[in-house]
View 1 (cartoon, rainbow, N blue to C red):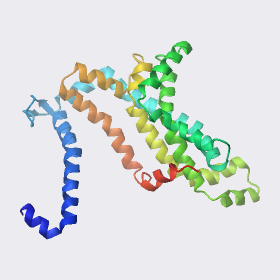
View 2: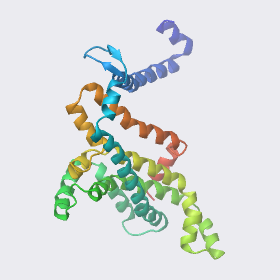
View 3: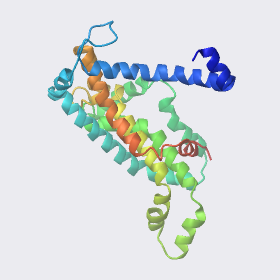
View 4: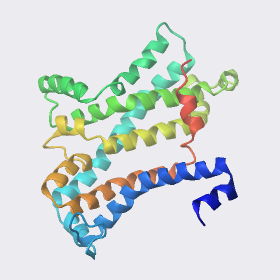
Length: 276
């Protein structure tokens, strides 16, 4: 069917929606498809679009590199620790922000956006100077602190929005029958706020997996994650090896998003980013 006939068949509005959607698919999926083709290419010579030979040669090459394999386990370990520590530190703070009013509350919440308001390298350099004095350079605690700085916005704002959505009468009713404040929080508030906490945890885990600049500056060379290893793969290995490693880096994100997709909604995000 010609574009003109298709235009008259579906109408102007649907036609232009189709055009915009097609352009989006082209720009979004073309690089991904090209990356997948290169990752499964035994032989690829630029500027050819289609590899000359397909196979698993570079997958075997990547998994034979002990340093690259260890970076995969390091990434999962750092991301898991960052998420757990963020939950322990930020959930009580989010509950306090949701339930109590105090002077400068909105300004205090806005300060969590500072780390995302300008390039983060300036923050990392300032942190590195302090870390040198505290002997945290090249250590796991130093890397986790860097990752925690990037998680505060999600781990404070999103759970705080979920706690605000809980009616105080539900907590007060539990207190009236003799439940302690901690019991009310553990059995009433925390379960009801779990969707927002799950969203924040997903973003924290994925953000930690993808953090490269701060990890490279503070943790190198002792702490080597997948994101920092990507720099070496791109510089030291062929293009096909970099494509393989980038796909490996994407797999955890796809799996986790698929597992928690029912929580990753616009309502959950919108509720969390309200200043009250």
